[in-house]
Image (cartoon, rainbow, N blue to C red):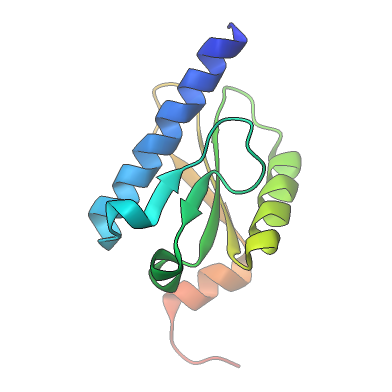
Length: 115
């Protein structure tokens, strides 16, 4: 696959994830943007208002073979710079997207009693 095609595939995936967040969470379109390919930091830029509702630093990967640990490290580093919880969203061709997040972040989503 040509590098330009790979970047277009990744950009399309980022836009898809952005639109899902707008639709499901009700984040305003101006408060959430897909960052440019090759730009440092999280793949989805969140304004202060969006971070209050969705405090995750999103890294998107649309690849056939995922280096899980390398991707997690990238996601964690980028999210830490923004003060957000890391959230890795990935898929391969013709599959539903999946997510990886820290166990502690998953437990906080469940709510209930904190220890």
